[in-house]
Amino acid sequence: MGEVTIGLLHPGEMGAAVGQCLAAAGHRVLWVPSGRSPASAARAEAAGLTGVDGGLAELVRSAEVIMSVCPPHAALDTARQVAAAGFGGLYLDANAISPATARQVAATVAGGGGGEGGEGGEGGGADGVDGGIIGTPPVGPGFIRLYLSGSRAGQVQELFDDTPVDVRVVDHGSLSETAQDGAGAGIGAASAVKMAYASWTKGSAALLLAARTLARAQGVEDVLLAEWGLSQPGLEERSARAAGSAASKGWRWVAEMEEIAATMGAAGLPEGFHLAAAEIYRRAPHDAEIGLDAVLDALSAEKGLPER
Image 1: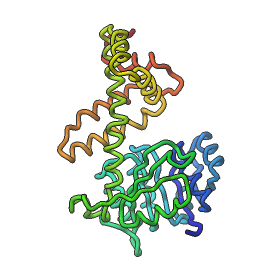
Image 2: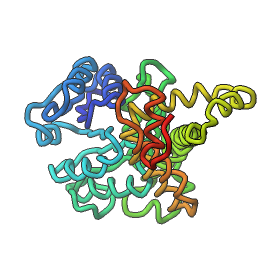
Image 3: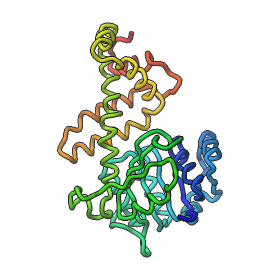
Image 4: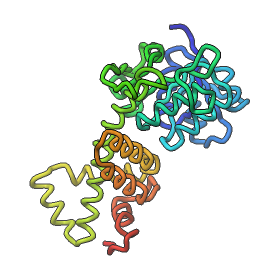
């Protein structure tokens, strides 16, 4: 595939890494510096991205493809802004959102911001592609997988040819007819993969933090750690890693857990597991420099339980 002009919203840790892969593959990757932090600017420069001075309007005018890689709570608003700016190309939403939200995003960009209609193109809005990212920022082959669904998923896949990103198009044959209507065939399938995967990885991490916090609040944390050492080796270390992740990234996982809860509810499963996980990440101090003790104490202190 020849050079394609791609708009990236936005160069966070994952977005910048994905953008770097695309730039290295010969594509022109644009981003909007206005209103972004110095850290974002540094990541964008290191990734070889090109800033546009005219804000989102210029990015929309220039880009053939727009990729949204942002915190889940901002996914729909980002789609609305892009649609309102008149984008009529190919729009990839690669955020951690529910299949229902993914379909709403696709309908929004297709309908020019109104949130109605199906796939765009042909003088209308944009064509939506659903994406779900699993893994760590791609520094080499095998670090990241990008799952895609939607009728134009194959075109997005081609953009990543010969890059470290392992792109996999999800067969939407098992989706219900309802799930395939209104936003393009298969929209939501990639997000369903992401929701199911993160329901365990991030959901179980929140449960682990809750279990250790409970033991601390009851004065038996040392006993629990000793038992973990006997019957569940590795959990103490994993709980410490979970606390670090909650402090550094938990702010963006609150909405992700809520999206997972909604996905569970839509499938007739209990929502409570992941609403509780969202509350764990909401309570966690959002400070990457904070330690394990401060995280655990914050989880219980809000309810007036004794601190260690």
